Image 1 (tube, protein in one colour):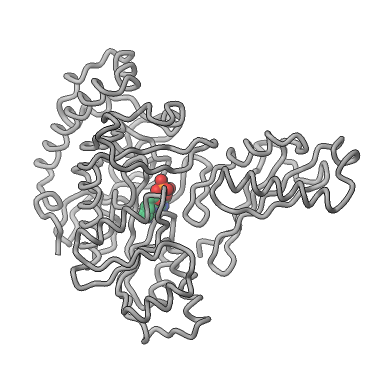
Image 2: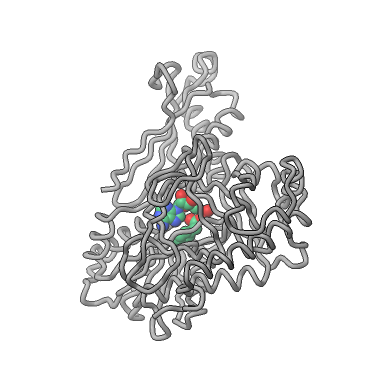
Length: 436
Ligand code: DLL
């Protein structure tokens, strides 16, 4: 089944023509409604009339996460506030999150994109589908939720946490589909083992997994343990949320909803476009978004676009699995974390030297984060001479970290000079997670 064959199975010529028209319109729209883009285009001596076909996209400037941060909170919003009916936020490289406002039309397009994904996974009206991405500012929960309602399956808005209750609900309600991070799926499998819930007591058959990188080995393990078929779901809040791209039954790359999100692959150093098949940084232009459209947004995700036709009948282009990032963003329990966020907290506390280390691990399929930080020598000898004083400082540090990162971290305060030094670029992160 295909949700919208008119858009998912267009000929390449029709698609490029549609993309060209939409690109011209969106450039005109941001030119008149977002001073940031108007100034950028004027600086480059470009007017919306210079953008006529999709090939003209290479003339346009890039947008980065820093641009979004510098224009916090609403600087890149194109629609008037009265038209915005939902606001999501995702973490940025400093304390400021990225704010994304959606109009009613944006939400309806997002629901359709999510419905396309679920339909490709084989989800239909008779399914009972649990959404176990976090509901809230994160786009995973509500994004997937609206898609499930759009296809007409019964949505169970389980969100994250309370995993034992969730495991019992999956058994008792006969839940047939689940959307969550792949690591949460493994955690759920473990919880079921602990509760004595066996594969033949549950009816799960489809999983929509994403929000973090995962591998074929993880797919196999989740499938074996939960008895379902696991599909990739990709997206990012700056562009929309989950369902920028989705796997079909062939599971050879994820089809991009390219009538709404135009993909390019560039060399992250030279910024030159790369030909199909080559791995580079994925860049998206939103072709229809009203709330916060973005032009040539650098995702920092590394992947390739896969040439050739897909036997499933969909003609929209596929992207490979994400192979890494061109920046230092970590994804911990589905939350984006930048070492610079930790640094910003360390720098606000006079007790600490600017030396810290993030140690990321995966224990019982749950990501953990430990932050080690060094004391300044004068503080070490003068005031921090009792375990109670160190304990108080650790608690204060942990609380500040939590408010900036949105996830809890263990903290360890180290004596001056004890964190490892390196000769060249300093190592701030040790990621012990084996992605199998
Ligand atoms: O993670 C949206 C989402 C929710 C996608 C639920 C899929 C499912 P952000 O919090 O803005 O949005 O994080 C976006 O997460 O740039 C990738 O680095 C990573 N990511 C998302 N999906 C995948 C995936 C949501 N399927 C960032 N595979 C992106 C690998 C993924 N990485």
